[in-house]
Image (tube, rainbow, N blue to C red; front, top):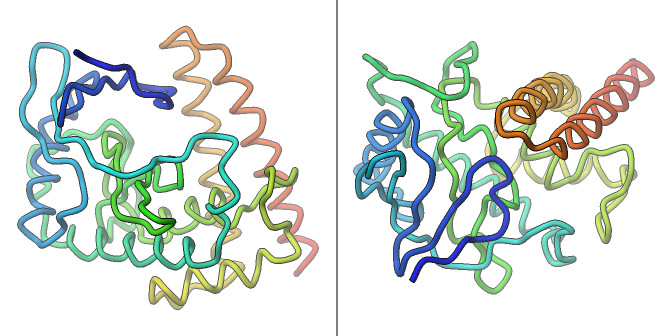
Length: 244
């Protein structure tokens, strides 16, 4: 018996025993090839592709708790930032050498194309056990890009970098310290300003995508999400200007 999983506001995900099915697209064969590549590179905490069945793809189910919004208070523990950053570094490093010949991506590639970015690496796409990150899901938006593209987005969701505080989350007064925790765990020499700069661009990009999907999927609530992303992008841009 299949079960519609919660979340997945841009893709209907159904669980069928130890597998899940999702809407497939022209990008799916590339994503499946990429997931198999990651496993060969030693990443064993991600979904594995099992095939394409008509308009649906089938993958293995990643165990653990995937938090939903409003995120539970334990998501804001500092070790979650470090865990996530280390997992993201593992994904990025493992992607080096992936063949781009004939690749098709749902999300446009970005420059510099240092690694394959997840493009939605955030608590809502991470699996947890006892409060620790044990897996990542939803790779359908992945594409080549700079490491900081993923890091900046992870910061917006997990620090978080928002104008209005998320329920239970640390405020912006702790943001610079928490960004540094993330960068140190990843092993990045990027600065606070680097993260803010890419976060602004990333949020505008996400707002544009959300408006496109609102029309394509007939989900007007995605327009509301886009408004929030624009608000936060403008807030972070103003913060950068104030600090210069």
